[in-house]
Length: 90
Image (tube, rainbow, N blue to C red):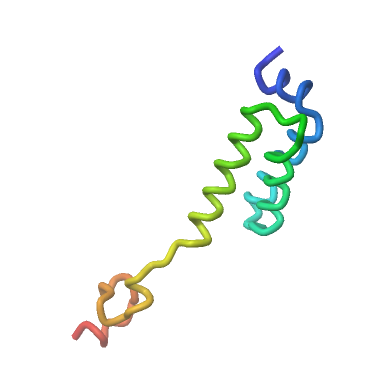
């Protein structure tokens, strides 16, 4: 029996929530992913490994949603190759 099979037999619903959250994450359905991942992390039957994976995935989603490309927000400072507006760089 592998480690993931061992976790699945112990965790029950927590692993199902984790799997659902990761599936939503792959589909860029971040709100639904966070909800499912929080359910995984907060399940009373969740092993520590499942909780850790769920919380790490939530952190990744937070990083993705919080990313701001300041160069694209201020076109005067952006390199022309980023903007593809050559007339601004002349």
